[in-house]
Image (tube, rainbow, N blue to C red; front, side):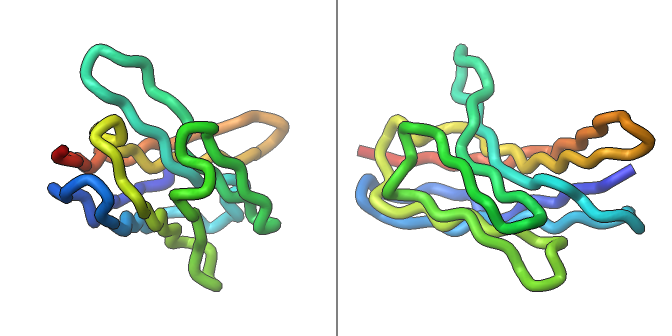
Length: 119
């Protein structure tokens, strides 16, 4: 089982920046995709950004051009650089890992980190 630990959330004013980190541990296999999702109160969890083991990235429409996902060379830590933050970015941000084994898909979630953007 893959454990994910997030850090970097907090309170920031609109227009400011934050950087989230997520470190994966407990796997001796390659994680295929890691990413960030967020969930605001009363809303469904939505995609923020993902990055594959090959380096391909994917972003939710609401964050394109403002957020950047990246990873370290060991591929066990990912980062989310969030710029030009808006109050509507306020949510709990969850790290996710997805991998394939024996033709099955497995996924793991972090505990979440709160991001609050004040107007």
